[in-house]
Length: 348
Ligand SMILES: Nc1nc2c(ncn2[C@@H]2O[C@H](COP(=O)(O)OP(=O)(O)OP(=O)(O)O)[C@@H](O)[C@H]2O)c(=O)[nH]1
Ligand SMILES: [Mg+2]
Image (cartoon, rainbow, N blue to C red):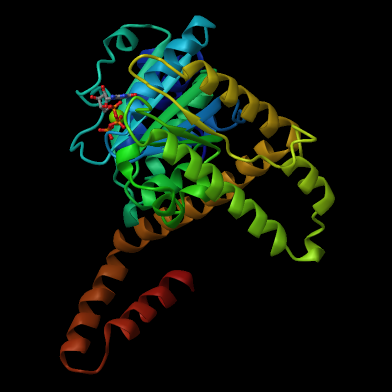
């Protein structure tokens, strides 16, 4: 972040602030491809804080994430909300333009000028949600959409990292996707704000709903028992909430809903729950907390990225690497001592 934007980017920024969808598309490409000046552009864009309600859908392949997302999107459109949609597809070798997979028809949404859809490939280091994906969400937010919906396929780390991008995380499971124990093991209990058991028209859905509720209940009880007293937890208050005396308690227990995304069954309940969660986020201060956590991770991400760039684009470092390889050959060094020398030079 060096100074005034280069004139082409300044012009793009102006059109972006002007609300031109073409400019949003260009800005996304700029960021996705990490073209020169993209950090400066983001710096300018992020001067306005986050405003959009960000909703993440995650879950195993084929669970119905896209179907549910389009139901929710359609519902929001009847309220005349402007929407941004990001589909993170780990299998997609390209990005931009493509719709949310071909199994689901998004044609109604795709032609609606009130919805901006972008699909992108995961390219995150370590298999996590790519920093660029989070940056694209920021762009959509800053562009002024009321809501930004994001779909990520649940394959390990990616689904857990969705918390780093969304205010409300909806975990979509289906009877076929395994039992509640598996969901617990996968860490889904920790990340879900709302559980949806989709394909409720299939056998086993009721069972899964019941087991998930029980699992969540057990987990909440354990959390209370093992909470150290000095954390200042008001146990009495939490227990009251558990016994439903106080519906809007200090915490949020993830509800378990069931839906049939194809027919729209249960989607209205889901909308109500999304709104309730938003209300809780805002009232409890949790929203600010989550945003703060996201900023922290972003700073770390950017530092990581810039360190890597600085290192591997420096002729001195590359020369040091070559020399180091020679020394290792002569058994004078190891990869560790060479790495240490390089770090020493970089951070000196
Ligand atoms: N029986 C039944 N089928 C459903 C339901 N919801 C979605 N499907 C079907 O399940 C398939 C997968 O739905 P998608 O919405 O594409 O699922 P997804 O989770 O987005 O899939 P990926 O993005 O590929 O991981 C489609 O053929 C849907 O028509 C449902 O409630 N009941
Ligand atoms: Mg999908």
